[in-house]
Image 1: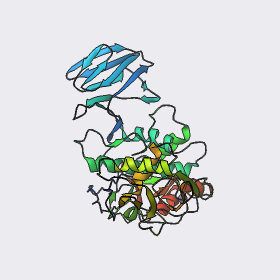
Image 2: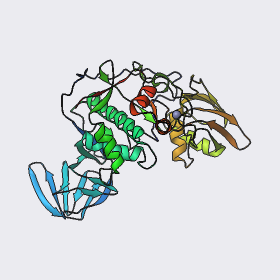
Image 3: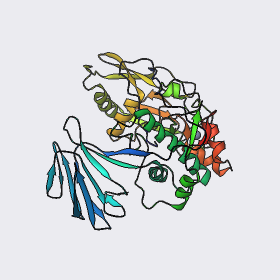
Length: 393
Ligand SMILES: [Zn+2]
Protein backbone atom coordinates (compact mmCIF):
# COMPACT_ATOMS: atom_id res chain seq x y z
CA UNK A 1 0.00 0.00 0.00
CA UNK A 2 2.88 2.35 -0.63
CA UNK A 3 0.75 4.46 -2.92
CA UNK A 4 -2.46 3.36 -1.34
CA UNK A 5 -5.59 5.03 -2.57
CA UNK A 6 -8.02 5.47 0.25
CA UNK A 7 -10.67 2.81 0.32
CA UNK A 8 -13.22 5.23 1.65
CA UNK A 9 -14.92 7.18 -1.09
CA UNK A 10 -17.17 9.80 0.42
CA UNK A 11 -19.58 12.15 -1.25
CA UNK A 12 -17.93 15.39 -2.26
CA UNK A 13 -20.54 17.12 -0.17
CA UNK A 14 -19.71 15.14 2.94
CA UNK A 15 -18.47 17.32 5.74
CA UNK A 16 -17.64 14.77 8.39
CA UNK A 17 -16.14 11.33 8.14
CA UNK A 18 -18.81 8.62 7.95
CA UNK A 19 -18.24 5.74 10.31
CA UNK A 20 -17.95 2.44 8.52
CA UNK A 21 -18.82 -0.63 10.51
CA UNK A 22 -16.07 -3.19 10.90
CA UNK A 23 -16.96 -6.31 8.87
CA UNK A 24 -17.40 -9.25 11.19
CA UNK A 25 -14.75 -11.93 11.20
CA UNK A 26 -14.89 -15.07 13.24
CA UNK A 27 -12.88 -15.23 16.44
CA UNK A 28 -9.96 -17.56 15.89
CA UNK A 29 -8.43 -20.18 18.11
CA UNK A 30 -5.01 -19.22 19.40
CA UNK A 31 -3.56 -22.57 18.51
CA UNK A 32 -2.60 -23.83 15.06
CA UNK A 33 -5.74 -25.04 13.32
CA UNK A 34 -6.95 -24.58 9.77
CA UNK A 35 -4.38 -24.71 7.00
CA UNK A 36 -3.31 -21.91 4.74
CA UNK A 37 -6.26 -20.77 2.58
CA UNK A 38 -6.16 -19.79 -1.08
CA UNK A 39 -6.55 -16.16 -1.96
CA UNK A 40 -8.09 -14.81 -5.16
CA UNK A 41 -6.18 -11.82 -6.52
CA UNK A 42 -7.62 -9.47 -9.16
CA UNK A 43 -4.76 -8.83 -11.59
CA UNK A 44 -6.60 -6.86 -14.28
CA UNK A 45 -10.09 -5.93 -15.41
CA UNK A 46 -11.83 -4.39 -18.41
CA UNK A 47 -10.31 -4.90 -21.85
CA UNK A 48 -6.66 -5.94 -22.13
CA UNK A 49 -4.37 -8.24 -24.06
CA UNK A 50 -1.32 -10.32 -23.26
CA UNK A 51 1.22 -12.60 -24.86
CA UNK A 52 1.68 -15.44 -22.39
CA UNK A 53 4.79 -17.61 -22.33
CA UNK A 54 6.08 -20.51 -20.26
CA UNK A 55 9.29 -22.51 -20.08
CA UNK A 56 7.32 -25.78 -20.29
CA UNK A 57 6.28 -24.78 -23.82
CA UNK A 58 2.63 -25.80 -23.40
CA UNK A 59 -0.44 -24.56 -21.54
CA UNK A 60 -3.60 -26.17 -20.35
CA UNK A 61 -6.71 -24.19 -21.25
CA UNK A 62 -9.91 -25.11 -19.40
CA UNK A 63 -13.48 -23.92 -20.05
CA UNK A 64 -16.59 -25.59 -18.71
CA UNK A 65 -15.81 -29.33 -18.66
CA UNK A 66 -13.36 -29.09 -21.56
CA UNK A 67 -9.58 -28.94 -21.46
CA UNK A 68 -7.17 -28.31 -24.35
CA UNK A 69 -3.39 -28.21 -24.56
CA UNK A 70 -1.91 -25.35 -26.59
CA UNK A 71 1.62 -24.20 -27.34
CA UNK A 72 3.53 -21.21 -25.96
CA UNK A 73 3.47 -18.32 -26.74
CA UNK A 74 -0.25 -17.75 -26.45
CA UNK A 75 -2.10 -14.53 -27.31
CA UNK A 76 -5.01 -13.64 -25.02
CA UNK A 77 -7.23 -10.72 -26.02
CA UNK A 78 -9.96 -9.69 -23.58
CA UNK A 79 -12.48 -7.55 -25.49
CA UNK A 80 -16.00 -6.40 -24.78
CA UNK A 81 -18.17 -9.51 -24.83
CA UNK A 82 -15.51 -11.98 -25.94
CA UNK A 83 -12.16 -13.48 -24.99
CA UNK A 84 -9.81 -14.71 -27.70
CA UNK A 85 -7.27 -17.34 -26.61
CA UNK A 86 -5.01 -18.23 -29.53
CA UNK A 87 -7.44 -18.72 -32.42
CA UNK A 88 -10.45 -19.69 -30.30
CA UNK A 89 -13.09 -17.21 -29.07
CA UNK A 90 -14.92 -17.60 -25.76
CA UNK A 91 -17.81 -15.88 -24.06
CA UNK A 92 -17.56 -17.89 -20.82
CA UNK A 93 -14.88 -18.17 -18.11
CA UNK A 94 -11.53 -19.62 -19.15
CA UNK A 95 -8.63 -20.85 -17.02
CA UNK A 96 -5.03 -21.12 -18.20
CA UNK A 97 -1.91 -22.57 -16.58
CA UNK A 98 1.46 -23.93 -17.68
CA UNK A 99 1.52 -27.74 -17.87
CA UNK A 100 4.44 -27.53 -15.42
CA UNK A 101 6.34 -24.74 -13.73
CA UNK A 102 5.05 -21.20 -14.00
CA UNK A 103 3.90 -18.97 -16.82
CA UNK A 104 4.80 -15.37 -17.55
CA UNK A 105 2.15 -12.71 -18.14
CA UNK A 106 3.77 -9.33 -18.67
CA UNK A 107 6.42 -9.02 -15.98
CA UNK A 108 4.74 -11.38 -13.56
CA UNK A 109 5.20 -15.11 -13.16
CA UNK A 110 2.20 -17.15 -12.06
CA UNK A 111 2.41 -20.71 -10.84
CA UNK A 112 -1.23 -21.85 -10.82
CA UNK A 113 -4.46 -21.23 -12.70
CA UNK A 114 -5.23 -17.73 -13.91
CA UNK A 115 -8.88 -17.27 -14.78
CA UNK A 116 -10.59 -14.79 -17.10
CA UNK A 117 -14.22 -14.17 -16.12
CA UNK A 118 -16.66 -11.90 -17.99
CA UNK A 119 -17.61 -8.77 -16.07
CA UNK A 120 -21.25 -8.43 -15.09
CA UNK A 121 -21.85 -5.55 -17.51
CA UNK A 122 -20.00 -7.35 -20.36
CA UNK A 123 -17.60 -4.41 -20.45
CA UNK A 124 -14.58 -6.64 -20.26
CA UNK A 125 -12.98 -9.46 -18.30
CA UNK A 126 -11.62 -9.88 -14.79
CA UNK A 127 -8.26 -11.64 -14.71
CA UNK A 128 -7.89 -13.45 -11.39
CA UNK A 129 -5.16 -15.63 -9.92
CA UNK A 130 -5.93 -18.13 -7.20
CA UNK A 131 -2.90 -18.93 -5.07
CA UNK A 132 -2.10 -20.18 -1.55
CA UNK A 133 -1.87 -17.17 0.77
CA UNK A 134 1.68 -17.96 1.88
CA UNK A 135 2.88 -18.10 -1.74
CA UNK A 136 1.05 -14.85 -2.52
CA UNK A 137 2.90 -13.14 0.37
CA UNK A 138 6.26 -13.73 -1.31
CA UNK A 139 5.07 -11.55 -4.18
CA UNK A 140 3.71 -8.91 -1.78
CA UNK A 141 6.64 -8.47 0.60
CA UNK A 142 9.13 -8.38 -2.29
CA UNK A 143 7.19 -5.46 -3.82
CA UNK A 144 6.32 -3.62 -0.62
CA UNK A 145 9.89 -3.62 0.74
CA UNK A 146 13.37 -3.94 -0.75
CA UNK A 147 15.30 -7.00 0.43
CA UNK A 148 18.57 -5.12 0.00
CA UNK A 149 17.77 -2.12 2.20
CA UNK A 150 15.23 -3.34 4.78
CA UNK A 151 16.59 -5.40 7.72
CA UNK A 152 15.09 -8.81 8.47
CA UNK A 153 12.96 -7.54 11.38
CA UNK A 154 11.23 -5.02 9.10
CA UNK A 155 10.63 -7.67 6.41
CA UNK A 156 9.17 -10.01 9.05
CA UNK A 157 6.89 -7.29 10.44
CA UNK A 158 5.78 -6.56 6.87
CA UNK A 159 5.05 -10.24 6.22
CA UNK A 160 2.86 -10.45 9.34
CA UNK A 161 0.99 -7.21 8.58
CA UNK A 162 0.43 -8.22 4.94
CA UNK A 163 -0.73 -11.74 5.95
CA UNK A 164 -3.19 -10.29 8.44
CA UNK A 165 -4.53 -7.76 5.92
CA UNK A 166 -4.95 -10.42 3.23
CA UNK A 167 -6.63 -12.98 5.49
CA UNK A 168 -8.96 -10.26 6.74
CA UNK A 169 -10.07 -9.66 3.13
CA UNK A 170 -10.69 -13.40 2.66
CA UNK A 171 -12.80 -13.60 5.81
CA UNK A 172 -14.64 -10.32 5.30
CA UNK A 173 -15.52 -10.95 1.64
CA UNK A 174 -16.35 -14.60 2.04
CA UNK A 175 -15.93 -17.60 -0.26
CA UNK A 176 -18.57 -16.50 -2.78
CA UNK A 177 -16.64 -13.47 -4.02
CA UNK A 178 -14.81 -13.65 -7.33
CA UNK A 179 -11.77 -12.00 -5.80
CA UNK A 180 -10.61 -10.97 -2.34
CA UNK A 181 -8.28 -8.10 -3.16
CA UNK A 182 -6.42 -6.35 -5.97
CA UNK A 183 -2.88 -7.20 -6.97
CA UNK A 184 -1.79 -3.56 -6.83
CA UNK A 185 -1.22 -0.85 -4.21
CA UNK A 186 -4.95 -0.18 -3.87
CA UNK A 187 -4.83 -3.37 -1.78
CA UNK A 188 -1.24 -4.59 -1.60
CA UNK A 189 1.49 -4.43 -4.25
CA UNK A 190 2.02 -7.87 -5.82
CA UNK A 191 4.56 -8.92 -8.43
CA UNK A 192 4.08 -12.66 -8.82
CA UNK A 193 6.19 -15.31 -7.17
CA UNK A 194 9.33 -15.64 -9.30
CA UNK A 195 12.79 -14.25 -8.55
CA UNK A 196 12.06 -13.78 -4.86
CA UNK A 197 15.17 -12.75 -2.87
CA UNK A 198 16.22 -15.17 -0.13
CA UNK A 199 15.70 -12.53 2.59
CA UNK A 200 12.04 -12.21 1.54
CA UNK A 201 11.58 -16.01 1.55
CA UNK A 202 13.14 -16.14 5.02
CA UNK A 203 10.81 -13.41 6.31
CA UNK A 204 7.64 -15.03 4.95
CA UNK A 205 8.56 -18.63 5.77
CA UNK A 206 9.98 -17.67 9.16
CA UNK A 207 6.68 -16.08 10.17
CA UNK A 208 4.47 -18.67 8.44
CA UNK A 209 0.90 -18.47 9.72
CA UNK A 210 1.59 -15.60 12.15
CA UNK A 211 -1.20 -12.98 12.28
CA UNK A 212 -2.01 -9.93 14.34
CA UNK A 213 -5.07 -10.33 16.54
CA UNK A 214 -7.07 -7.90 18.59
CA UNK A 215 -9.71 -9.31 20.97
CA UNK A 216 -9.15 -12.71 19.35
CA UNK A 217 -9.85 -11.53 15.79
CA UNK A 218 -7.72 -10.58 12.85
CA UNK A 219 -8.25 -7.02 11.69
CA UNK A 220 -7.63 -4.86 8.60
CA UNK A 221 -3.99 -4.13 9.41
CA UNK A 222 -3.24 -1.12 7.23
CA UNK A 223 0.29 0.07 6.60
CA UNK A 224 1.86 2.82 4.50
CA UNK A 225 5.21 4.12 3.28
CA UNK A 226 6.17 7.04 5.52
CA UNK A 227 4.22 8.71 8.32
CA UNK A 228 6.39 11.80 8.67
CA UNK A 229 6.60 11.67 12.47
CA UNK A 230 3.10 10.63 13.57
CA UNK A 231 0.72 8.03 12.21
CA UNK A 232 -2.96 8.77 11.61
CA UNK A 233 -5.62 6.89 13.59
CA UNK A 234 -7.88 4.55 11.59
CA UNK A 235 -10.90 6.25 13.13
CA UNK A 236 -9.88 9.71 11.90
CA UNK A 237 -8.26 8.71 8.61
CA UNK A 238 -10.66 6.11 7.29
CA UNK A 239 -13.60 6.63 9.62
CA UNK A 240 -13.27 3.02 10.77
CA UNK A 241 -14.67 2.41 14.21
CA UNK A 242 -13.78 -0.44 16.48
CA UNK A 243 -10.06 -0.91 15.78
CA UNK A 244 -8.26 0.31 18.90
CA UNK A 245 -5.05 -1.22 17.54
CA UNK A 246 -4.50 1.53 14.97
CA UNK A 247 -4.38 4.82 16.94
CA UNK A 248 -2.11 7.73 16.11
CA UNK A 249 1.40 6.98 17.42
CA UNK A 250 4.66 8.91 17.27
CA UNK A 251 7.38 7.62 14.95
CA UNK A 252 10.93 8.84 14.50
CA UNK A 253 12.01 5.78 12.55
CA UNK A 254 11.25 7.51 9.24
CA UNK A 255 13.04 10.77 10.03
CA UNK A 256 15.72 10.05 7.41
CA UNK A 257 13.19 9.64 4.59
CA UNK A 258 13.16 12.28 1.84
CA UNK A 259 9.40 12.25 2.22
CA UNK A 260 9.56 13.01 5.94
CA UNK A 261 8.82 16.60 4.86
CA UNK A 262 7.80 17.69 1.36
CA UNK A 263 6.70 20.77 -0.58
CA UNK A 264 4.41 20.46 -3.57
CA UNK A 265 3.47 23.48 -5.69
CA UNK A 266 0.22 23.01 -7.62
CA UNK A 267 -0.27 25.51 -10.47
CA UNK A 268 -3.71 27.07 -10.64
CA UNK A 269 -4.71 25.41 -13.93
CA UNK A 270 -3.58 21.99 -12.71
CA UNK A 271 -5.70 22.36 -9.60
CA UNK A 272 -8.64 23.48 -11.71
CA UNK A 273 -8.39 20.48 -14.04
CA UNK A 274 -8.13 18.11 -11.08
CA UNK A 275 -11.19 19.70 -9.46
CA UNK A 276 -13.10 19.42 -12.73
CA UNK A 277 -12.38 15.68 -12.65
CA UNK A 278 -13.57 15.46 -9.05
CA UNK A 279 -16.75 17.43 -9.82
CA UNK A 280 -17.61 15.51 -13.01
CA UNK A 281 -21.23 14.36 -12.84
CA UNK A 282 -21.95 16.22 -9.59
CA UNK A 283 -23.74 19.15 -11.24
CA UNK A 284 -21.25 21.67 -9.82
CA UNK A 285 -20.37 24.46 -12.26
CA UNK A 286 -16.82 25.21 -11.21
CA UNK A 287 -16.02 28.91 -11.21
CA UNK A 288 -12.64 30.50 -10.58
CA UNK A 289 -11.09 28.86 -7.52
CA UNK A 290 -10.38 31.44 -4.84
CA UNK A 291 -9.44 29.35 -1.80
CA UNK A 292 -8.50 25.82 -0.69
CA UNK A 293 -9.01 25.39 3.03
CA UNK A 294 -8.68 22.38 5.36
CA UNK A 295 -12.03 21.84 7.07
CA UNK A 296 -10.35 20.25 10.03
CA UNK A 297 -6.93 18.94 10.90
CA UNK A 298 -6.60 15.82 13.03
CA UNK A 299 -4.29 15.60 16.04
CA UNK A 300 -1.77 13.85 13.78
CA UNK A 301 -1.87 16.71 11.26
CA UNK A 302 -4.00 14.93 8.64
CA UNK A 303 -6.64 16.76 6.61
CA UNK A 304 -9.52 14.43 5.71
CA UNK A 305 -11.63 17.10 3.96
CA UNK A 306 -11.07 20.37 2.15
CA UNK A 307 -13.39 23.27 1.38
CA UNK A 308 -13.12 24.72 -2.11
CA UNK A 309 -14.32 28.31 -2.60
CA UNK A 310 -14.96 29.27 -6.21
CA UNK A 311 -16.85 31.78 -8.29
CA UNK A 312 -20.05 29.72 -8.10
CA UNK A 313 -20.00 29.12 -4.33
CA UNK A 314 -18.19 26.52 -2.27
CA UNK A 315 -18.17 22.77 -1.73
CA UNK A 316 -16.33 20.20 0.32
CA UNK A 317 -14.29 17.29 -0.96
CA UNK A 318 -12.57 14.21 0.38
CA UNK A 319 -8.83 14.99 0.31
CA UNK A 320 -8.11 11.52 -1.07
CA UNK A 321 -10.12 12.37 -4.20
CA UNK A 322 -8.11 15.51 -4.83
CA UNK A 323 -4.86 13.57 -4.28
CA UNK A 324 -5.95 10.94 -6.78
CA UNK A 325 -7.12 13.51 -9.36
CA UNK A 326 -3.86 15.48 -9.13
CA UNK A 327 -1.89 12.27 -9.62
CA UNK A 328 -3.81 11.51 -12.82
CA UNK A 329 -3.08 15.02 -14.05
CA UNK A 330 0.66 14.41 -14.06
CA UNK A 331 1.42 16.15 -10.80
CA UNK A 332 3.35 13.89 -8.43
CA UNK A 333 0.32 14.57 -6.32
CA UNK A 334 0.06 15.21 -2.66
CA UNK A 335 2.08 12.40 -1.12
CA UNK A 336 -0.09 12.35 1.96
CA UNK A 337 -3.13 14.04 3.48
CA UNK A 338 -0.93 15.56 6.20
CA UNK A 339 -0.26 19.09 5.00
CA UNK A 340 -0.88 22.81 5.18
CA UNK A 341 -1.83 24.77 2.08
CA UNK A 342 -1.42 28.42 1.11
CA UNK A 343 -2.04 30.61 -1.91
CA UNK A 344 0.92 31.74 -4.00
CA UNK A 345 1.22 33.94 -7.07
CA UNK A 346 1.09 30.86 -9.33
CA UNK A 347 -1.37 28.66 -7.55
CA UNK A 348 -1.16 26.80 -4.27
CA UNK A 349 1.71 25.48 -2.20
CA UNK A 350 1.14 22.32 -0.17
CA UNK A 351 3.71 21.61 2.54
CA UNK A 352 3.36 18.22 4.12
CA UNK A 353 4.92 15.19 5.69
CA UNK A 354 4.97 11.50 4.91
CA UNK A 355 3.81 9.38 1.99
CA UNK A 356 0.62 7.37 1.99
CA UNK A 357 -2.51 7.33 4.12
CA UNK A 358 -0.53 7.29 7.36
CA UNK A 359 -2.54 4.54 9.09
CA UNK A 360 -0.98 1.54 10.85
CA UNK A 361 2.65 0.55 10.31
CA UNK A 362 5.05 3.10 8.80
CA UNK A 363 7.23 0.98 6.50
CA UNK A 364 10.21 3.34 6.46
CA UNK A 365 9.79 3.75 10.21
CA UNK A 366 9.94 -0.04 10.61
CA UNK A 367 13.14 0.03 8.57
CA UNK A 368 14.61 2.73 10.82
CA UNK A 369 13.70 0.96 14.05
CA UNK A 370 15.00 -2.36 12.72
CA UNK A 371 18.32 -0.70 11.90
CA UNK A 372 18.48 0.43 15.52
CA UNK A 373 18.01 -3.17 16.64
CA UNK A 374 14.25 -3.49 17.15
CA UNK A 375 12.78 -6.93 16.46
CA UNK A 376 9.55 -7.64 14.59
CA UNK A 377 7.42 -7.83 17.74
CA UNK A 378 8.65 -4.46 18.99
CA UNK A 379 7.89 -2.91 15.61
CA UNK A 380 4.40 -4.40 15.40
CA UNK A 381 3.52 -3.49 18.99
CA UNK A 382 4.66 0.07 18.31
CA UNK A 383 2.37 0.60 15.32
CA UNK A 384 -0.48 -1.72 16.38
CA UNK A 385 -0.52 -1.27 20.17
CA UNK A 386 -2.52 -3.97 21.91
CA UNK A 387 -2.40 -6.39 18.99
CA UNK A 388 -1.02 -9.86 19.63
CA UNK A 389 1.04 -11.90 17.16
CA UNK A 390 -0.43 -15.42 16.97
CA UNK A 391 0.41 -18.35 14.66
CA UNK A 392 -2.80 -19.65 13.06
CA UNK A 393 -1.34 -22.34 10.75
ZN1 LIG B 1 7.12 7.01 10.40
